[in-house]
View 1 (cartoon, rainbow over the protein chains, first blue to last red):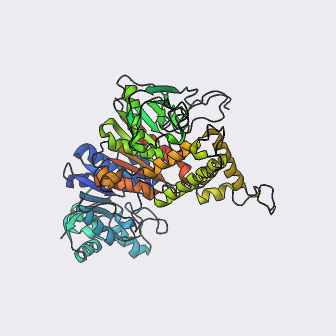
View 2 (view 1 turned 135 degrees about the horizontal axis):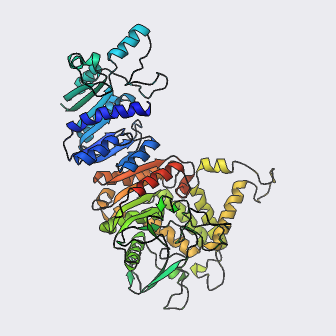
View 3 (view 1 turned 90 degrees about the vertical axis):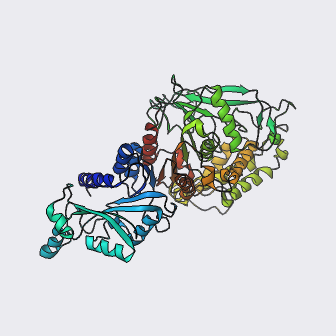
Length: 209
Length: 379
């Protein structure tokens, strides 16, 4: 992802997620990037907690912002979230990272082990732009939300809204809230009507059923 | 010797001494009736005395952490890469105190010091001091310097252990705690290496049960072996391969037991030069302090319980090529802190240099350290 698009993506998530999070909560942000969300929540919502990040530059950026970042590889099956105790957090947040995980299903369950509620955002692979590129051009889609070619992307577990909701049902996860937006943070009538077709980025808040 | 002092160095520095008359009761049950501490300071203490940093040294370190003692000095202080104007430990912002610990051999009271009761050097009779004892003596040093609260206590390796102990023993006396390339306690393997080093020293024919000063000898071979062994554990396999490979000093095998491989030559040099600047009794004592360090042991062997009342904010740094205190050892500290919802940032620096990486200028490590230190409020 280019830096610009990533920032735009993060801001889209940021204000919506911050509305969902109760002030004063203790949160864990998986793949916290440069710490923008946590720094914002710390400053404006008196939130405490940690960010997990693997990338050196992003970890250094978090530390510059005063974010409690822990450098770790979420894809390391020996580690994951096992260093965190059960129900230690009010929310476990994962923005635009689910699709880069080896086992999103296991990680979702881990999120709900260490946190009371989970919040994820991911690019919707069922979006019209994705479907039409596959259908008309017969190529893997490239869009605002998915800017990289198939051979050079960390996004190895792309899914649609329906896929995610089916997974939740199968694993006993109760969806509490859902929002769909485009890459510039807008939410239109069409998105609400047919979210899996018109929603570019999906946001979910969920807990154990 | 520097032709001229680099602009990002603290320049020429002078050690200072403080004498302490108040007896210090030690973990071993014995008491040091009086003692001296040698230390150096860099930068200026501000009016509020809120910008003071304490630097704790590692096994073979001392008070001389930065700058030069004279223009004839071959090398600057041991943490020159990190202490100086504009460096992560920025002398333009902070007032830095760096001491030689009790039991050391660089000016603070230790085995080489004359025991006032006998008129002879303490030698092996110097009590075995612990990390807790050091921290207690460091607290007194700070008080004498008028520092009630450190902006940060910082250390690498054994120095990191002291920083960690500070946060436990004096939770309201430091704002930040920086623990680099450390571990919450030694592993059996770590202790095993220390024991071999001690055996090498104690079995040297010149050791004389530690009373070698009177005989005007030093257990050279033992101390040299101990240092050679230690050095192997400070470097990584990758680093040794890159630095020496199987390179031969004279280009061909000689079929004898002289120095043939470059790595042998390097280790012998490290060992020999160490003998000239370090005391064998101090080495024994320092390795014991390492072995004994285990703050969790007083808290049902739970590090989380040991850290339950810390108030400092933490920066923890580990290095991937460090097998002496590997990243997973630092992560034990991180976990104990997050279990208590304490404020902590943790960076695992990719570096092949082994344990010694904490002394080297590695760009990511520099960035993390600088960013963290800039965030320390000294108003």
